[in-house]
Length: 158
Image (cartoon, rainbow, N blue to C red):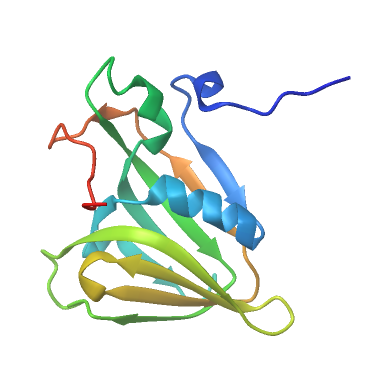
């Protein structure tokens, strides 16, 4: 029996619920979360549960084929990194609760025996590094899509 690859059009308006267990999976999540924005206060690390999480306003890149039909959309989503051993940040002012960050990518650097570092690359040269025992990352939409306040598709001048 032949199976066709899934297409974005097949997803309709269903919320995303994806899990990354290897670097290829993480690349997919990185593409889908590119240009997500979030207040610094929505970033948490539970050391005891070894869980790093953030609530973001994600641009719906998977909706690209329909942008001509309606304005660009965002959706609130939760990104959860399990088995987090340590978290460090650079280039961001964690003391200012008014700070809003823009997530550009999720980068993976492998360590030994499946361990490694997931780096949240932020606009403005900021970064959050999460040392992990293994790749176990979930991205889940938690609200219905809404019209992006800017009514524009993010542009990186490329």
